[in-house]
Image 1 (cartoon, rainbow, N blue to C red):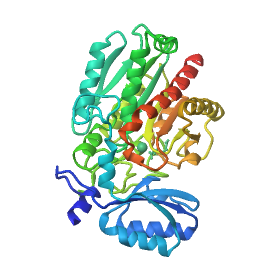
Image 2 (image 1 turned 120 degrees about the vertical axis):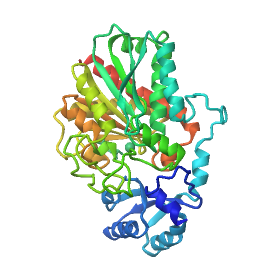
Image 3 (image 1 turned 45 degrees about the horizontal axis):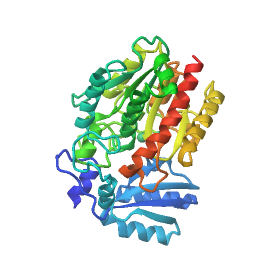
Image 4 (image 1 turned 90 degrees about the vertical axis):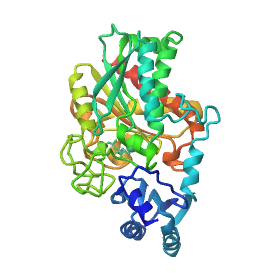
Length: 416
Ligand code: ARG
Ligand code: ZN
């Protein structure tokens, strides 16, 4: 059991899969400073896996927090919460059951065949990128932008009529390994574009006049690790100066106010910024690709989960971005579109004050390169299934998010 916990806290390099029987995910309503202190001290004593916010350093009074605790800590933790009058709800009584419940799509359950309403493993997604480029060669081409730390090629799908000289939108999914709905969305969105092109005037207009660069999985090594070993993994898989701890948080590794607020210089934390700005292969490849396309890329969209938020710069400072009013207007419109389908509630605003401050994040970096339309989505849900959003919600989540992205794309097109 000790071994299992050590592995879950990132120490193991063994290839066997971790299980989470009896682990719990707890949602707490923090009211007072005492509550916050209690959670922080529990983190020191029991080493908690924070789901939301992403680090104990971010918790504050009047905040909801979700975290995952080991089975053999649950009794202690629940006792302390009750003793200190912290309101809480157990989101998962047995995390392993939650992991199994996530893959609830009936169709094609055991099959390795690609599906837009399933979570696909990396091999399946990689084959899919190749098939899309072959089958839809008039609209899609596949670009290799470099290799991950473990040596896997990273693919960007370029979608649009090849003659287009107009503006471009870059979108990445899967910076954080455990946010599985994110790569599922990128795949869905590519399908949406190519399958609607000949039937839908709006899509036709978009693909005639602009180019989408879509990176379906940015953190491939981490994503694979969530399939083979630890479903709760977040960072990439490169070694650090601490031989016990692997991985850099790629959304803290970009060269913008690097390793300052909302980030940590400690390799064993989930928000480790890496050894230097853009130290990681995955970061470098994205940076080089964007810098090579700065003349056309007008918008940068990063897809995460969960919280149901649409965020725009800045994240590293409370100052307002020069065009924050415009970004706010766009967000308002995009969220209205998104909610029109199933009434899903989203909040939007500057990242630092709406979710929490972070430095070294991809959206702020892109923005400071002159890409004035930079957004981060936090997709479903708001803390019920969290990272384990069931497959049965992929379709609805992707459909509503598609509306928001199309709204942003239309705006960018008519303002470039
Ligand atoms: N949840 C994401 C993360 O922790 C995004 C946080 C907001 N930061 C941002 N730059 N948009 O990396
Ligand atoms: Zn994330």
